[in-house]
Length: 64
Image (cartoon, rainbow, N blue to C red):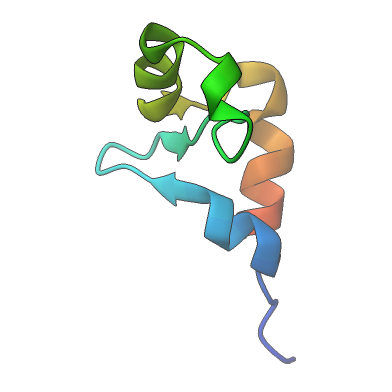
């Protein structure tokens, strides 16, 4: 049997922490930043964890 490949888009977007949680990065940070406040930009910069509702699908894409 060949190895199962990970979803290449998912591997670029998610990272696994040392404790096994999955870290994600927030959307709305790429353009039209002049309309967004500096406070909002700082909040969007911080990574977040994947919600439990999406965890099974993300784990499947990453083959964890």
